[in-house]
Length: 92
Image (cartoon, rainbow, N blue to C red):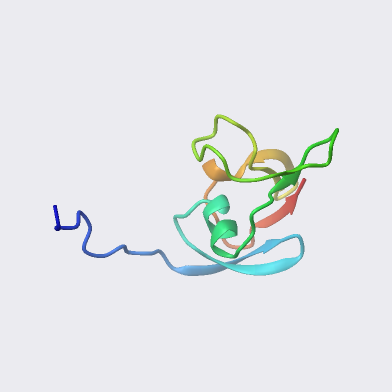
């Protein structure tokens, strides 16, 4: 099995989103979580009790470890939400 399934990955148009006041590069069609991972971010939120860092875990909206405030709406699952122009993300 030396053949690859995909010859080329096509990315959407580059856009900029704001994460905690910092502009990061993203591509139209990808999730907010993917853009944050690509920018080097690993901790998306901290637990209430122990203040432990939590990050991208399941990638399909089941675990809620990737929640953040997006455009003023709290507790948004970033793995299930696409980036869009003027997107503002505040980590919880």
